[in-house]
Length: 416
Image (cartoon, rainbow, N blue to C red; front, side, top):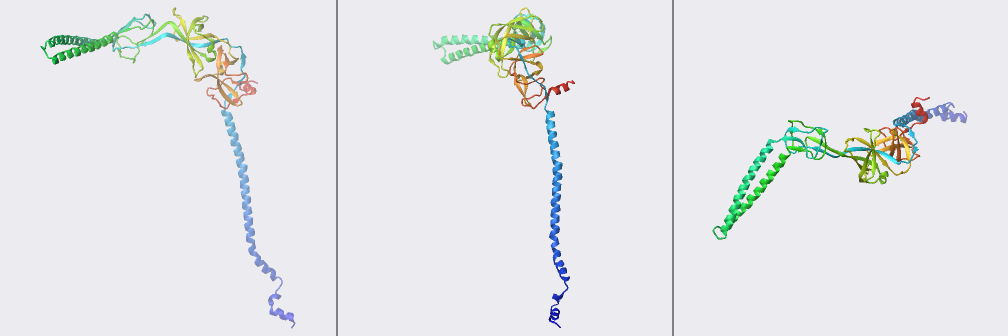
């Protein structure tokens, strides 16, 4: 046998069929497929996350955009729509007309100073009475009896004081001759002083009760007219200000109060004649005299309180009326004409609303002529301001507003 044959027999593995080798390699490489499957799974998860992220972005972004658009639309709808107009130049103000309150020169409620029943009244509303006129009478028997008692006590005190004074004088004479002791003399002298003080106390009590009984009659405190009578015969009257019996006003001279804008405070002087008109007397001009001012500007309204006295001895004017007070003033600054509807009446005084951009601001103004339809604004605005024509009552400074365009205004008014 040849050597190759022997080698084949001794080492059979070397003579194994060639196709066995691949089988061995196949068995050894089978475990390497596991990491390949894990990589596929990770890739699938990443792809899935990417898909979910894309879907989330695609779903959230439009929703956020819609919410932002809704918020913007809501804010736009919440902002009030206003019409902004430019102020028209007006003539310089030379006469200013202001409302004035007509009041009586003296005004007094009348109360009872003593309690009792009203027995009679003498004057009703509208009656013109003189100072000291008897208005009513009150029956107060308790006070009358107290006065009688006090008078009796005064008589007793005077008798005791007279007796003590006589005794003191007698003992002063006797002590000089040592007929009585000094101690007894001092006792009677002190008793005389004490009884004299009791007399003064009793006199004061009598005087007090006399004054109370005098209040049983109610008199007019000044010349004037009775404007109210709140009691009738038989009513129980209490002491004090719990119930007003009468009300009186002195109307021979009337006071007219008005508030002059501070910008015109230098145009007036005390003693000058002021014209007044009242709706109760159309076409008639009443003259008054500027008698006094507050001599101080109100820091809230920036106005000067002015008093004008009017002679009313003819009784034509009534207290409580509203007068139009005409002041001749020096021209100050430029005047602008606005519709009355542009004015805002607040506790801070007259204001108007102006627009800067899309923001509203309220500014205080001073007015001149007012014809009921338009008003002249003297201070507070300029020719470049945009004034809100009909400001809402809820308008506040710094509020966002929507200024209507001419097309929107025409549409809102139903125009073509």
